[in-house]
Amino acid sequence: MTEVTMPEKSRAVPFRGGGFRPRPVRFVGLGVFVVLIALVEWGTRAGWISALTLPRPSDVLATFGELYRSGALWEHLSVSLVRLSVGSAIGVSAGVGIGILIGLFSLIRAGLVPLVAALFPIPKIALLPLFVIWFGIDEGSKYALIALGTFTPTVVATYGAVDNVDRTLIRMGQSFGLSWLSIVRKIVLPGAMPGILSGLRISLAIGIILLVAAEMLGATHGVGSYILQAGSLYDLERLFAGVTILSVLGVTVSGLIGLVEKRVLNWRA
Amino acid sequence: MYLSLRGLSHSYGTTEVLSDISLTVPSGQIVCLVGPSGCGKSTLLRMVGGLERPDRGEVLQVGAPPEGCLNPLTFVFQDFALLPWRTVEGNIRVVLEDHRIRRERAKEIVADVLARTRLTDFARALPRQLSGGMKQRVAIARALAVNPAVMLMDEPLSALDAQTRELLMDDLVSLWSREPFTALYVTHNLSEAVRLGHQVVVLSRRPGRIREIVQIDTPLAERGLGNPELERHQKHLWEVMRDEARAADEELLDD
Ligand SMILES: Nc1ncnc2c1ncn2[C@@H]1O[C@H](COP(=O)(O)OP(=O)(O)O)[C@@H](O)[C@H]1O
Ligand SMILES: [Mg+2]
Image (tube, rainbow over all chains, first blue to last red; front, side):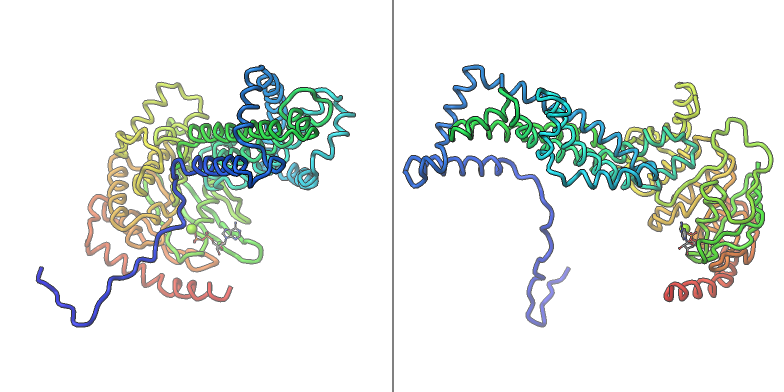
């Protein structure tokens, strides 16, 4: 090609695309944690953060180590994990089941959607005394609280997910003469799975919040009761050690759901 | 087996969409249905396939479906309707699973239809990995797997680009030449209609009525690009349709 001489003054077309597209960036999240903790450590040591405002991270770590060595960590964690898993297993399975029924049957939808909408905004913690009367002060009331708390968001996410299943796929199933059950099992359920799983993230986070609430009454063990005891004694190191356990629990649960998503939803791009 | 449509009429609320459609889809032939958009072609096809009830009239299956037919009236959809969580193979198997077919027999059927649509190498691919043309070939393979008496195709090539459309038309022609199938084929593309149709049925704008039925006698295999006979038919069809299409186009503006 021959050299082209520009008759007028020219400039490159400015770039104005890009952005609006989150991509994974490694280690930045970890970095934020490290910087924050280092800052607090420095502040508490230098004295511009008073010991009454925030505990020193290294002290929290020491408390944590003690908790671990004494075996108390596992004692608290195991009871809490059982409560969380039993309660949320009941709540999530009932929620998915009823959510699918609401998604599939108009009558059930008309009957239950208002009820779910009425239950959703109730702070479940307020119902704890009631549950203690109904299910006893032991494990029963704790399971019930966590179950109800995880149930409502799961129902809402599930029937929303069922509503969003591509109707043309369902028509396809019908046009090939698939049975009703096959359509539900092979088209509706897998199609609703992304929505159900992202609902599960929220439900389980709520489950962890309610775990602490459930352990406010009649619990001697459990991460929640540990935190509450520390709080009432104004023992900030133990309080923070407990809160850290909950955070780690939350991150772990969310990571596990991420793994399940990767496996179950590998058909998505 | 062939299909006979008798006096089909239908309205959605107060809008009449189809009016007194009577038509025969003979065995072993492709009947193309053309008409301006919104004239009720898809509605008609859904009625023929039993996905919707007509207000008046009936669709009759005359005679017995062929031996080994699992689903006499089988759709091929414009948007493919593949299950994104199943592989190519899985998408075909899903329509066999409810029919209590032995495992080995199902395997044979899947292998056979994949070979006929030249998809054997892609058996384990997921739909998201396939181009539009390939997806539609999977959908066609799935339809062939149930050995249908009549295929109901709703603009099967409309979501594809022009080159892919040509390729798929060739595929359909060679599939038909090797083993003639019966199809009611909806399209708004006249060159598709004259390329594939033994008969072309022209519908008027809404409410859809039959304006004209054009018989095309040239064998499918001889309908290459630029065939003067086909050009003549296409020109004639366009003359019949032009005013309808314009009127339909202007109608949309005020509703
Ligand atoms: N389920 C429905 N409810 C109400 N109106 C509909 C429904 N389906 C189609 N229509 C209307 O019926 C007319 C014909 O639609 P359709 O059969 O999809 O036309 P075509 O496929 O020929 O473009 C359109 O005006 C459309 O808006
Ligand atoms: Mg249509």
